[in-house]
Image: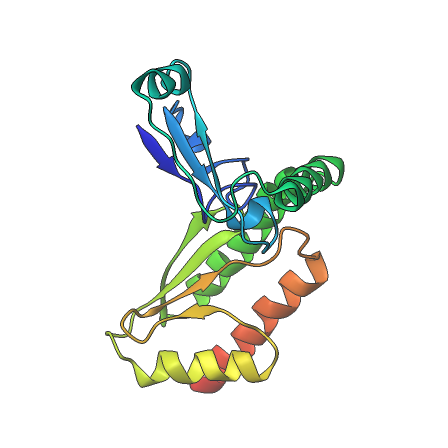
Length: 186
């Protein structure tokens, strides 16, 4: 089993890796992005005995950033910081709080169909059909107020991927701004 944790890994879902929410034990885990905070490095972790089995075949892999000491140093520092500052646990706690506030908001506005996610990887699903002018307008209004949410015109939802050090004030401010914009649309 291979777990692709490029987007979900390193605390985004409130655990170190997304697969941990399901009690899975993958044979291979692909990681990147959050592991090095933007520096171009990715990695895979292999469960025993896979490395020895690959060595026995004579398989060799090479790529442009292989054995990059700077990338390894950055990854080590990012992992150290995540542990030292308790950012994985913070992601779980702040994600629960943000999701609860958004769920309460959804109960007040028929425009929101569902709020879902884990940790600080959340989505707001709207009731509008695809290519909704109302969803696009809301996206641009939030952007104008300084809030960047994931949005694709082919899907009536917003992806929320705030930083793991999201403050309670920023979380509350976002929900208040979203509420104000939804009321203005009503």
